[in-house]
Length: 619
View (cartoon, rainbow, N blue to C red):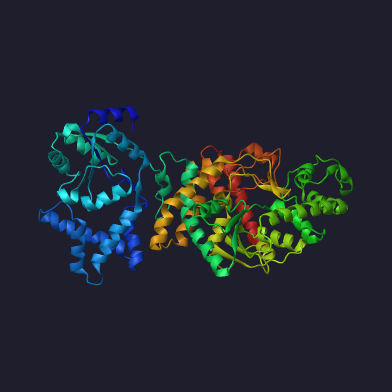
């Protein structure tokens, strides 16, 4: 709506009429009829949505045929149901529907500003709706959402005339006692609210609000976050629509697991636990801390000797880095190291082969005394941080997104290195069934929410093909923790990631809007819905998703290379020529992008096919 034109339209009107649903009010559900589905959960009747819609249609057809009304109202619907089905207390269920409808609506803040403006201009404000709810029932909803000064609520259920038949406009004008040309109607339905109103002699303005709802996302509350703000960014919508339901379930699951395990506090590990931490903060939980740690921050702290296990943990993990990049990241004093004994000519030597990788490990061994002194220094600094945060000495439940269990493995090594006995009970979103996870989590205590060994293995394998996509929803806007110093954290030299802030906002807005309803009615959100949203994004992205997400740089301090930037789904032939072994993080994202050449896409398809063949051969 253009502000200047709308102000002019309000100025010339005597009465300003607003449509109700999707104009004055929004529902938290993606579809209006989803309320019936949720009612079915509550009363234990899976077919209730279909049943309720069918009965409404049947009684409406009867009333139309008798020329008594254009459609049935709520009382008529349930009276008809009660006559044809005596298995339930239908009066009680009708009251449940009214209460759930009331609890599901919230204020459209954009329209609320125009409502307040019309009131300030001395206009009489009314609401006009085609709905089976009557005016009194609708008034409760709009007053709940702050529209206390609406003078009258007109419903087709009361007037027995509708917008789609164009009969309601004349009836309302007569009741208001003003000619139609002095009434301005504002609504979201172009046909019913605008064209039909104008044809009936009213002035009308179309409220054209595009929610960017993707019908392929199966969530019953999909779009709730987008409706909460007028201008939602791509990342904001992504956070709510893809991960909103997941985070509601994670909040409930982790809270329940804490009680089940008898843990004093929950430690949400950085950066994976950032978004969940924000939700616990919103709920006022005082028994939850944000524990800032990373693979890098505890890597050296857990090493007391350079045995094979420790050497296997150390970089390099990928080809293409210089020796200096690796040593700087480990904060080793280069001038004290003898790297020529390991076969390197200079610090600028590039790690190009598997043999080069082995020589880096040899360098650590050759300079073992200096290396272990650095480990001891980092161990003491990490212990000071954990002590300041009162993590040591308490029974904790640790949360991490998971995949391979590296955080738990490194935490256990660190605790052993400082002589601290801790059971380290972990809660993971999911653990992939890999050789690495089996080795790292052998003997460890943990539980998984979405998938783990023996649980949803096939689905986990599909997610693993582009695990960077689920990881988008477990990041934080702040940089990764590099090391500890003076009981505090020192971050890597990264810029704050605005897209991560927006994802976090989208998840938080969704949670604040939906969770109270879910909690009140004990709504069950199935894991299959959550899986479907994630897999849809991984396997069938839109072009917009492929472009926006694909342009994200995959920043990992362990494998960062100054001469090469890696993106989630952005690639060109020049990069391939410089690094033919480059990782492919999201195949479907690359293939969906319109700006990537056919040659590059062919390279990706062939590379992924060969990788798949090799995995089968190794098995």
